[in-house]
Amino acid sequence: MNSESMLQVKKISAHYGAVKALSQVSLEVSQGEIVCIIGANGAGKTTLLNVISGLHRASRGEVILKGGALPPGRAAKAVARGVVQCPEGRQVFAPLSVMDNLLLGAFLRMKKEKARVEKDLKQILEIFPILEKRKTQLAGTLSGGEQQMLALGRALMSRPKVLLLDEPSLGLAPLFVKEIFRIIASLPEQKTSVLLVEQNAHAALKTATRGYVMVNGRITQSGDTTMLLHDKQVAEAFLGAK
Ligand code: ATP
Image 1 (cartoon, rainbow, N blue to C red):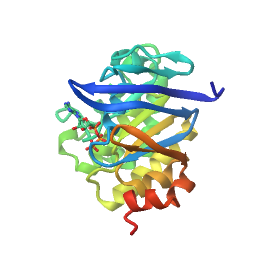
Image 2 (cartoon, rainbow, N blue to C red; image 1 turned 45 degrees about the vertical axis):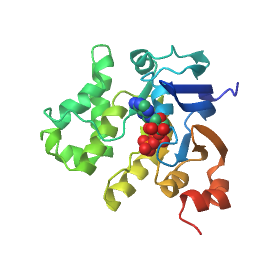
Image 3 (cartoon, helix red, strand yellow; image 1 turned 180 degrees about the vertical axis):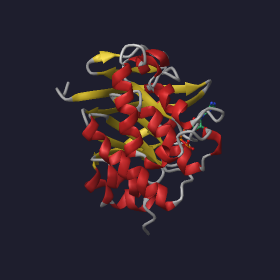
Image 4 (cartoon, protein in one colour; image 1 turned 90 degrees about the horizontal axis):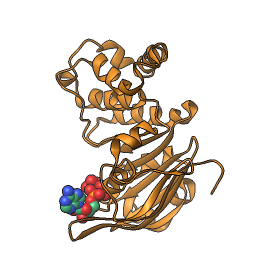
């Protein structure tokens, strides 16, 4: 194993009943690295994140965090070990305030690390000035882009070792897209490793250092993002080149 390896996915296959969604998927994320997975609708990207975070049980293969296997299909265990998923579609707690949503992200460590949680909250509000402005507002009253920021802020409040991001730019106005990728690019400074799933392939490849291409539940290509950005097949399939 690579000594800096944070997350290893080894030969994962997954099904929904008789439908095979993933075939022998393997990938790796090093400590403090941003890795992206690009692929069309239905390629299996969300399923892969759900397998890693324990929300979906793989039929084969294993997920390894810092050299130790994660128990399959056990989402609470994965969170406790530092693997946190920020799902597609925001999913904030609409009837709670922005502040309470953020504090819920730190729920597991609230008792033991109260002072640290307060410090982290301050930092998150600095990273996301819009959340500072809206902190007493109910989450359900925020705009789509603001809710996306909140979902990311809440995930960061749990101080993840590995953050799994599912389509963070989906449906956002261009200004928010730029802002969210700026924040993602800064995460390695906080020692967070990121596995980023995106249909906005251009932004994903610009933000990550390595990438994997997924087609019909399989990894078909992988490598440095500079190489993938200049690859003819990737350009034609995902970057709108002719
Ligand atoms: P998208 O970007 O549209 O979310 P994706 O790359 O994340 O696509 P998945 O959502 O992982 O792809 O879907 C992979 C395959 O599994 C698809 O064929 C999809 O139809 C199927 N699938 C996903 N969820 C279910 C489910 N709950 N039941 C049955 N089939 C499913």
